[in-house]
Length: 600
Image (cartoon, rainbow, N blue to C red):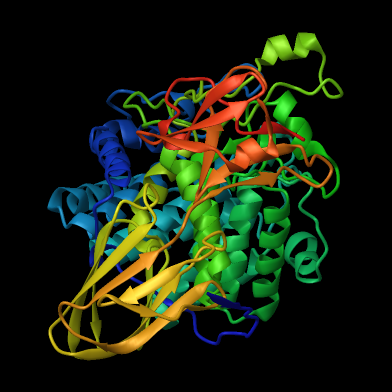
């Protein structure tokens, strides 16, 4: 296999496929979709509208959802949990319902999204933003929901409701990007400084492109809220300013930089996003997750390593995965570089796909826990006893937190992350069992992806076409897949990999079959250069987690000779005997270690 570097600029981004163009067949992904769909469809209209109605002084019948979604005029962040972010996830849920409709075509999803928008429209008033500690955050989510309801669910009223929303919000927005923790409304407590106006440009750019010339006001607003001075300008120059910033929102802001490039044509913002991703990658855990205790880290600070001993709040999983998978999707589309697909795949399998199901009462999976038994130079034995020696999958103590809003969105986006298209080429990014349907000129093409990857290394694609048709099939070859091989109709094809993709260009007809082998073998990755003995163990795209409560020590030879034990399990021979290791999706309720100590 020949691998070739790639650094050329690409003028036109790859096209996203439509949600409805893909039939997904992966049981784990489908189970997550069924979970979030059931919960969202089970919430009452009055409960969802209650905080809006209360905040603008209207009657608010029905049952209060409680948790963060609840409105309390007397909320005090120092003593109260319920009431932090009233109504904040409403727009995300409308967005998710609209995406789900685009996937399935189920009319009840479309009707629910449109009905919620009409009910919400009856509450639109500036007073809502006066009473809201997160006016920019909530406005951003409403923009997303209304935009998606229009483009995906055919809600003909959505854009008019959106314009009324914009006009109501404007008097209570800061007028420009304000960094988190900066005071911009006097006389308020610290929780009023946690708004995220710097994330708004992404959706404002998207809706401006959707509206065409009529979207000029949204385009102007997007440009005004770009966080250039303190974030994008230094990132574009290669200055690492991530340290100390709120993790999810500032990674999400990189998606705004990408839209400034994709819609606005700004090369500076593309460079800022690329540099920001590289800086993020350098401080990521082996799972692809990042931001322990919701903070990005300064380079060389040692704080990522220290967090293994000091925190169970390692990665804000649904929110962080949503931002990460959007960012890598945008970067892949614009650069055609497969390393962004590798990163997306890693976060999907090792983080969000293992999130615990959203509960009807609002309990949600918030943090992935990478806690390990603390090294003696970091924490005392008393701290070890307080924190425990291993990680656990647990529900957040918060009800209806931010992650209950992003989980349905990231789950729906599984349908658009697997494939991309451009005239004359289809790109395969994720090897999920699925069927893709598209048109290549006048020819209708259907491609079915079969196999049990990543349980097994074989991927098979079957072509069905209304006529013989020429196009290039671009297959992502992960960086770890040494010795990958390819056959077309049973005959070997030379595999030349450019920027992480191999190309098969030919005339295709019904019955053509492509077989791809992505060999998997054990490997390890060190946490960082300062701690070369603290390693994560991987097999293919998945991290293997040790089901253990106490530190696991193993030799390099034993790590590289880890044995598959069947049933999706592996056995590692450690200094204390055999240890069972499993992917994150199989951890269940058991304590686990993300990192082990390698000796010898």
